[in-house]
Image 1 (cartoon, helix red, strand yellow):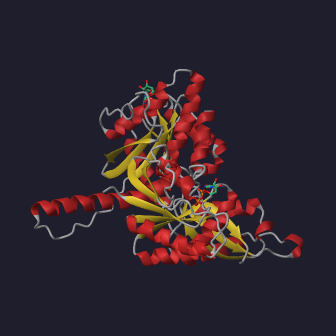
Image 2: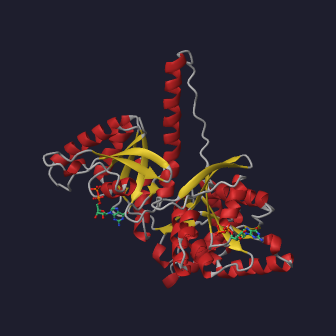
Length: 454
Ligand code: GDP
Ligand code: GDP
């Protein structure tokens, strides 16, 4: 039996939208048959290279009568009974409602693994609701936008270990049936591979680099017609670290026209970025920081990925020291949003620098996952506000009261303040820059939200 995931939540949170995104056209169209009650839909989902079954509690209209709660409850119970885990969606824009709380309760009691998704998280409006979702006590919410396809990499990362554990559990059960004497359950180890995307303009050397990492001339993507438009990945072992590399080189190589090439490359990159934890932005030493490179690096930052910049074809560079200084200067100037991101020179062709690249990737991943204890943050905040007090608009000094890290991957912080609207952007940048420096967090986006006291 494939792993089955139930998508549950109150009406209108975006369950069907997510279902459709995961299942695409592969849905068994049971609901088109007249007379069939549409209550549980099932489809074969595909996310990255994961395959699983999704069960959706569709067909609940936004009714206001009392019967809704009861029906929703019954339907949710059935869906989770049929599934191995549940994805509980809340609406990040609407925030957490009493109905959500009731469903959360039900899910907690079910004993099933529950993932929490804060849907409609695109843009700024989603942030508050996603924060509220912490209060449901179901762990870190995965910020999603079913409509825009955002957060799919995080969803994949959360599902991967569950699916892997399910698969190895099933394999064990099979073995047990065969030899019947192996009663010590093997605990599946958490060997979730580090997800890496290599992005960059055509001819930067992405395929060469990936092949060098894979250590063999393995063709990543077949250029056959009709190949899936999903990001394609390969699992490998890089210097002892299990990794999964995303690339869509085959599609890019199919494009003939230069202009088309450019477009495809950016959207391919986008897809790979969404699935990645660490994005390696690969530049060509001859033509570094082209507009396309800048766009993709900016995108990786906005998508909240850890970023490592690698300059390729270093074997062909003459005056290396001067060139490196130029590159560093250009990076500070052109990509200020990635301040502190590691810059590594490599030669995909000769393999030089790949060790340093791996070290940079591991460090960036580590920082991206880092959690700073609240006590240290508050000590730090006190020091920062003392060194440079926030402004006092209209004579009332803005107070920075309390700070906590609400999320990792990337690190996100919330500062409780007396008048969040009055805090100038420059002050927010001062805090972000300070965090990066004082807690040694290069190569990762840092999110910082200012909130009223609530
Ligand atoms: P369901 O009742 O939970 O199955 O919700 P639907 O999938 O039918 O979605 C309800 C509404 O929310 C629809 O108008 C969707 O277009 C909208 N919606 C779904 N996902 C998103 C999202 O990620 N962002 C935004 N802004 N709207 C969404
Ligand atoms: P992609 O389009 O980004 O996948 O780039 P490819 O891997 O196809 O490489 C484009 C060209 O750059 C090919 O001719 C490669 O041989 C060349 N190339 C890739 N890496 C290096 C390198 O480290 N040094 C040099 N000198 N050439 C390289």
